Length: 266
Image (cartoon, rainbow, N blue to C red; front, side):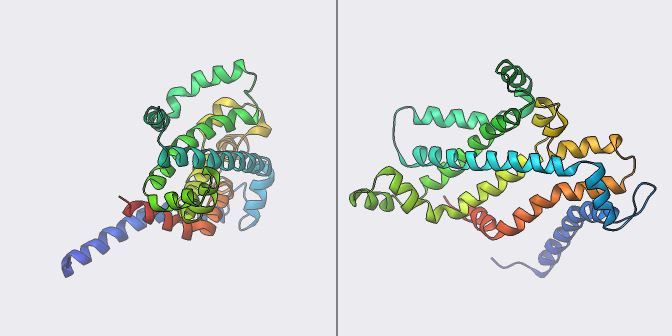
């Protein structure tokens, strides 16, 4: 389809406006992070000051531990559930899939209070498991939906050829279906990591111990408890966001490939 010159210019103008709206807050925070005010020395020293005063070393360590556990466990469980629901036919598969869909549609705000009392009765509140277990459940719900859709669109001939060669279900998954599914799995890993890293409500409700606060939660307490200015807060925000940016830049090629692959599948 041919696009006229006027329409092409209008598309570029609209995209440029949205790009400026998306980049402007990021540039504002970065410029402020290197600024100077009454409590901030200015330049790179702002990051060292925010790191020391705001205890971001402890908060980032907790976020790394939580993210590694959630992403690794959720990826394995989602892969197995998506493979079973996408390639196998067994009684109750449809009902089970709708249960996973219910997990996607249920907002965390609706279940966080009863979830708190359930975990408290098990003696798990104020532990890292009170943060990890709910987020694993949320990630597995989406991961199962995502990978089931991928496995349902794989060629049945690949699975049937593997079965004719005597491959078991495990061998078919790990050696036949998983290698071409790498972009879809990587996309889920990146999304799951970003959601886990940025989660705020569950750590806020489940833990009160300062050493168990995650990085976004620590950033919220940083303002008011340790600083009144915006400069150190901006430096702390950059420190909290930096791991997500690094992970995305490292895996962006596979992430974009997985998103494009998912968008063109029927």
